[in-house]
Length: 589
Image (cartoon, rainbow, N blue to C red; front, top):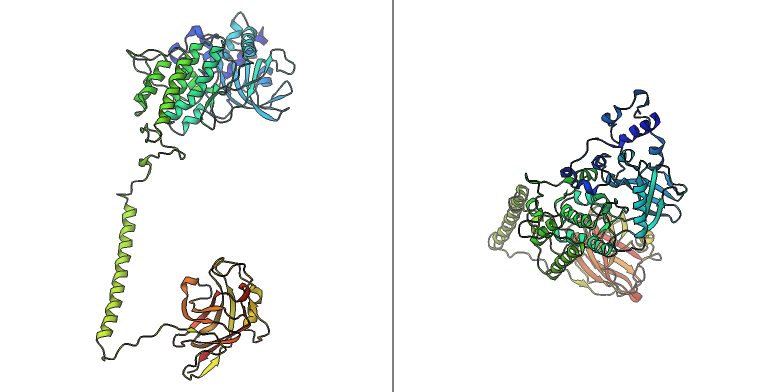
């Protein structure tokens, strides 16, 4: 006798409060609950996506047990340790992985498990003894579990896109089933999120909520037409798929559930998606990690439109009608078929109005929505940082305008003032014709530049024959540097390619000689501020078309430069150019 009492006391560890719930608190009538009022508070509130943890020991229950037989926190019964721990095996095929939730009224636990034979995830509903079973005519709860198993077997042929498909049914006494498990139903795993996880990020768009419940309403309608019930009045039995559909994920509803309870469950699901509150059982809401719905002093639920302005009136009326909370002059929704038909009309009407922006219902638009909320864009009209940046930009612009105006003033003054001599205007650089010698210029004393380093300049590629570019300044015309052979002439693949020559110090270059064996190559001579400057930072000094042999390009040595770029814009024959030697001469003072 003490062992039975000891076991009974140990099972109270799963109950945070032994006081029975009232019908107002649970949202269920006592006649609909087979376990009686005492079974509505059996486990603490689980966090979404995590296994539930056992609560504190019920002191009221353990006070009736002798001190020598009372369990401690380190003492658990063999029944509690066998069937409900992560890693437990069922019939040597299913391994429990994560506890999703529980339905104490049905004595059910919801688990995500692994089918070790087919290597896939499954949803398992376990049936365990209820605390009230010890005080009933069925102390082991086998009759209750047997009735639920029989109903599951009857629904084995039912398949619908809104409900998980039944894969296996395990009855009490099945080989490999733990002793404390009275039965189990194995269904396909429904990916996605729980109801609590779905609404935790914020309210769901009204039309998305209607589409989500429509799929489950269709499944409920088909089940009722086959004489079956789903038991979708429990928030942890339903999951929201990644494409936004609500599906019944865990089977084996309690024996007393009826078609009317399914209709109320659909209304509760729609209410929860619209308001982020659960309108049925307060204990189920807390156990699922949801907030219980607010009620008026008279005990009536507050309509979704009162908690969230902008909810369409048709959804507001349909939701309250399914929950049996319709106002004066409004009827109650009695069947799942009627609920499904009205949800279908709402969804179809929304599809017909897709070309018009939807009414703002308080929920932010999703990234894939065609119509985005304009109020999601930041209002920068009174942004201090934006105004500060604008003032800074205007100040810089004003300074630039003043500098330009000052420069123009100096030029105009030099034009009309001074000694009266005409201003000196430099003509643009002329292109040097092809030939061994360029046009003769005035005799200027010059000397060759000795220290010259070169590198391939290729902004749009990886540098053609970069290892051989030093042969262009090695003093031996027999060695040369050449570009790659291109399939198309410039600028089909790239704007050009060149050789960047750098000096130890800025030099007044007066003449440039290029020895090439690819006549027809067009080269732009550009001055560069640095060896790693971009093409846009260089200035064109002259342009030359290379002939066979040496081509002399005279330069203006009045402006010393430290870097000169030979930029090839037109390739020679066969879309390839070669440079045997490059020499520079500087003016001698």
